[in-house]
Image (tube, rainbow, N blue to C red; front, side, top):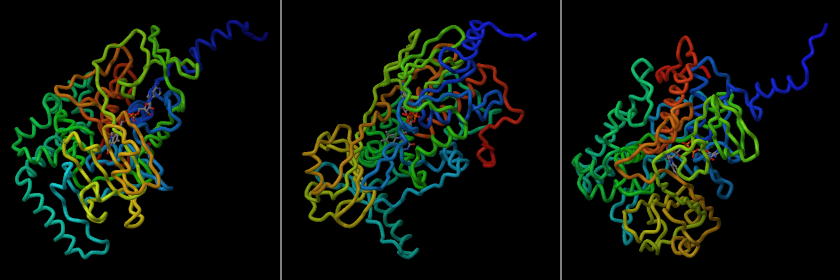
Length: 485
Ligand SMILES: Cc1cc2nc3c(=O)[nH]c(=O)nc-3n(C[C@H](O)[C@H](O)[C@H](O)COP(=O)(O)OP(=O)(O)OC[C@H]3O[C@@H](n4cnc5c(N)ncnc54)[C@H](O)[C@@H]3O)c2cc1C
């Protein structure tokens, strides 16, 4: 006798097994394929034996993964358009690159920096030496540069360095093993544990004045750095400011071929199911699971959902509604120009007198935050990256540049507009299984902070879903680079 099931029962069973739109009931869904979403996927599959990559769905509304990690092509050459530099002590990203076999590209330490006040360069480091210069001359050159900086900014330089090192030392606690590092329910708890919370309560300027820096160093050097890294003044909150200052240290690097490969590699390593060009329009709690509706008209049923994108300028409808504090977004307009700068704009007679990295002071009349040379084709033909807070129109660009062959503009919803004291959205958005990685961006926005926040969310989700841990937990042991993907 054959056991045949009546068709309607079979259909019902299939529907129950596969949820509303094809996803299994045990799926974990991640919205966003930037470094936060991709590292959440990576840590989830590394930290529990209960999840296979196939159960991880990552939704990305754009055609490419990486989010704010993206390259731009100018005259056939690729350049970082968003997140560019990685600090040598960013251990998660370092480990990702090593595990994924991605090569590092050093970011030159000897930029010829000029600080522009709208009328003149108030300070300049020395021009870089030509390639092939002897070791001795290079050492002397570095020494003279240090003396120049010391002459202008004095002991403030050492105090600034101490301030950054103290922040980094505390940040390193986030790499401790599981046994000495709790899982955090809130960003406040996470920051208080490492001793970094206080820095989010006051402005960078107030912190640096307390640390003994003089006001000239803050209005020139510090402001140049915060304007380059966050498009904002030294009145940003202290932790974001300290992270920004760390981005001016030596030993910085980037992934050869583009930092976006980190996100692509992590998603591949996690074996996650990637839904490209599929934006999530709504997330609805439906009893035991979440129903995610996409702009392709599909529905997915997920036991837990991780939001890995800032919600400030993203239109996702939550049901029931969630409550998060308002956060302003700082837009950075990245303008890529192949051409040549106009020396007259800077009151100079020759292009060769214009520093290779132009940083700016907080003067409202200055229309850009920074200009840097990305590639020199010849003395009269270069590719530049200009950062500004507002769009630079053609007539303004024609004053700044004497010739433009190609211009590409990107308007980034770049990072939070930092205002101390910072308030943080919850990590658990609904007391259930809805998580928000990018609440941590209110502390500081960077690739590494995204990875650190994602790692905590992965641990939190595993703990709250009571998923089993592997017998030898793959805690982030940064001395052991042999961890298996
Ligand atoms: C100009 C610029 C320069 C920077 N420089 C540096 C630097 O030098 N070093 C550094 O460490 N950091 C830098 N940063 C910051 C760094 O790039 C970011 O902090 C980091 O990349 C953020 O990653 P994320 O994954 O959290 O967010 P994102 O990269 O923004 O990823 C979110 C993803 O979610 C997708 N998404 C949004 N809504 C939906 C939806 N409804 N459905 C599906 N998908 C959705 C988005 O398309 C995006 O791909 C810079 C940023 C900018 C803009």
